[in-house]
Length: 473
Image 1 (tube, rainbow, N blue to C red):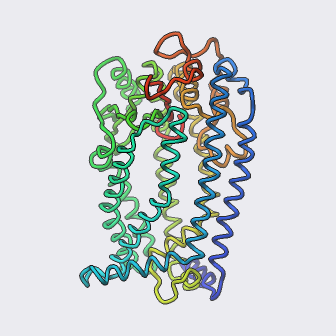
Image 2 (tube, rainbow, N blue to C red):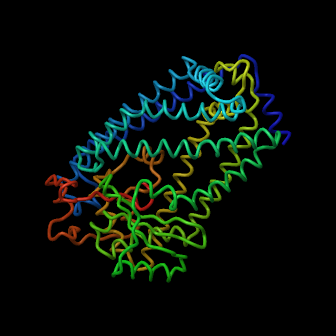
Image 3 (cartoon, helix red, strand yellow):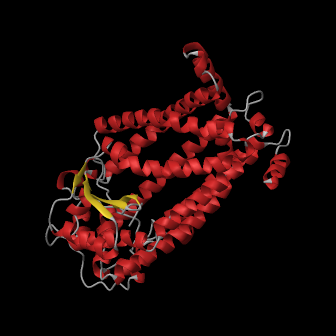
């Protein structure tokens, strides 16, 4: 790894303006994303739906979808500006070194001497950082949940549940951060310049561990999982899993409706023991074969090896991150430019390195979106070959209408932000030929009619179903 060592020496230049460079990258990204947002906003001003949807979507529902899209776009612009101001303020006001110094004094004043080393100090520093970040983001979170989502009938959270979730999340952070961060720092301290090999192995093991304990210890803190009742849906899903040789262990229904009208379905677990979770709102608002079509798409990702490949790509990405971190971990000029003259805490170096890595991560995100959209088309094709063409198409349309999802998108905005193809592209790939409006389980009223009349999802359970394990199906 002489190349990494030479690169480390090359980049450690006294008085190099790291702070200006990182802030410059951040501001440039903000303006670029703002430019993309303006392009998308123009699309959200369109008055007519795309041709492939003109027979499926009423004008009223299209107008409401466009209105929801514009409301979200405005919120994102203001929220991103707020975040940008926070980042610049953190750096320009030297909040990081001040927070490091304050947490150090806190430990010296109240903790036993054996808990005043770098690892204990880093744990208190990160937990304090999390609390500050949560406090600063709280106004945006409250507005998004109780104003924006409430206005369009998607929010089902009560203030009590919102606060309870926040408390549980903080308790979870206090439980998980200390052991994980301790192991992270101890590996770096004890394994020398080639720490990234061991850190990568630790990260892979941690992923497997979290996959194992998540449904047992974490998910039940926020949601109730109940076995899917006997019936046509359970029989059909089990038959599909058997046909595909999917190692299904249990089928669950999750009470996602207590927080939001949005919902999904997904699977998780170890390679030899998988669990499928279906949101109650998806079951309530879809025909049985449409739910099965959704799961055929999801299991297509597994059968085609998408989940395995993405896990492999994530491991390569982690290795690349940890290897590059070894270049910056002892960069005195980076620490000094952010106010750390005498001390060079590893965790602070990792936070600053993450900001340096920002532009490269943007490129990786773009490439991953390209790959993800390719996989979505392949999973749709897989479900189509299983005989679920019409059911999948109807499900996609219903989900789109119920969610008031964006009906069309600017190509540049979609390429940068979307991990899924837009609905019109997917329907064309499925060779969908509309014959009549898609109807709900509730009778002759179409989804378009239900949304257009302004039915409140909280009262009439006109649930907006979104996604099957990702942002959209």
